[in-house]
Figure 1 (cartoon, rainbow, N blue to C red):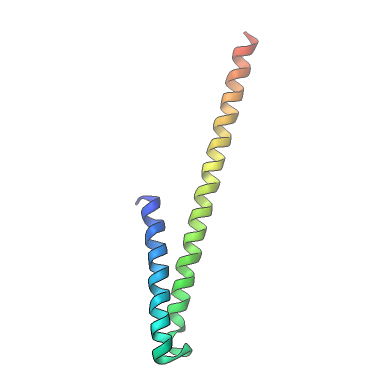
Figure 2: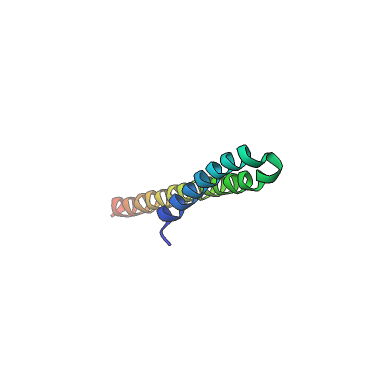
Length: 79
């Protein structure tokens, strides 16, 4: 599945669970609606983890490309 799609779904789930928690909290109280808050926080933390993981992978790929370019340029300079 597309990474952007997964992140969008996680963010939408987090907002939806939070909205449901607010409605349920007003109706039933904290004890009965706590699980919705936990689902919302879980989706939000998963979204953050995936976003940071993707940015670290992108940074690592760029660094490897820069190192490869430097090695290639030093090889051509010596000739």
